[in-house]
Length: 201
Image (cartoon, rainbow, N blue to C red; front, side, top):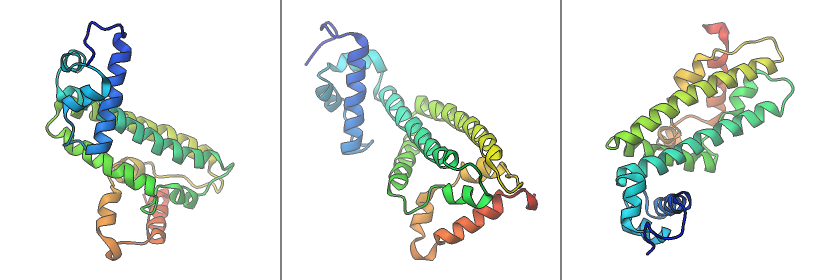
């Protein structure tokens, strides 16, 4: 194992630790993460990990926070790419562009988000990071709604409360648990279309 006195720069050693920790989380899950395995995978000493991240919780706060931020950004970017692909939009288009339960990538990310949220219950640095990311997501939604409004073709407007009150708090996981007793994709799109219109406000 390498020590803090090796020839690697602090940045490269810390980066290797983060990569190793992420690999261990993807392989064994959050609960299965062991610092000794992270150290081995990063070719780093345990003391070096604690030097950079203070504790297992500190390491998890950094890695899981990064993963959570990536998931938020990827989801937002995928949605906005669809918005930008059209020169004009209807409210129905917006409802269609939202992630659906049959999207395997979205489902995988949703499970990871739930795991990260659960881990934050006993990890204050992670909880604080997620609070900051949630505020950032709120600002991203505001930015996205502004872009959408500029693309609206039929003169209709959006009720932006949907993005902040419904979309920000819904979870595909619960929809999936409902199985066949749940609602269909078409029912979801119809409901969202109605919720997004300002007419009923």
